[in-house]
Image (tube, rainbow, N blue to C red):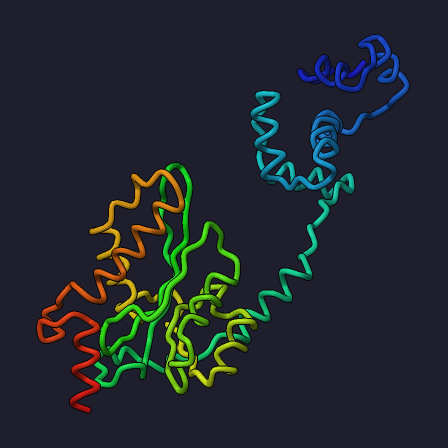
Length: 277
């Protein structure tokens, strides 16, 4: 009778057969496949994973569940030998379509970091930031005039739906014709709804290069000041948070002078540029 491998007892338990039955089977076999013990164990793990496990997962499961270390080349060889082919997950066609839509919606960087502007409502920058409060998150969308640093419009919501940015654009109230609007390549700004809205209002779309936040530095600067100066984290309700944001934006536009604006507030500087134009 052939020598039985050290895993025989474990394999018999898994297979639901007795050792005596296993020995009887050996007597009827002239030469047993030397990989059979390992194949039996790999197959059991493979089937538990709905035939989706690759060699890495099988190797981890062998170590975690059975304290067995097996070389990955051996696992690959046994899988191939016995036809244990891993099911490859198909790509989600919806995600593929969305990716293509997103790629085709990206536009060029028209602004090109021209952050020195001398005419109000010529160029604006927009983005979204998150504000944690009371174990929740709120999302603030802001559009800022690059020339005057004035916050032209904003919206805050407890979600990231498209209406967050669409509301921000709507609040311009017809002041935006021929205005350049710069953003990053986020989902909201590559969305067909947003692109269509800009076209309807005759606005020019511009986008930062991928992963380059300095292309949208003016809005990042505003968010930095807001988070430094507003005690938003201690707000208990969304209504309280919204009131604080509204108060800060009003203060920022009307009462916060800036050195680079000839020591004027954004609204004062806007009026100054209109008078001297």
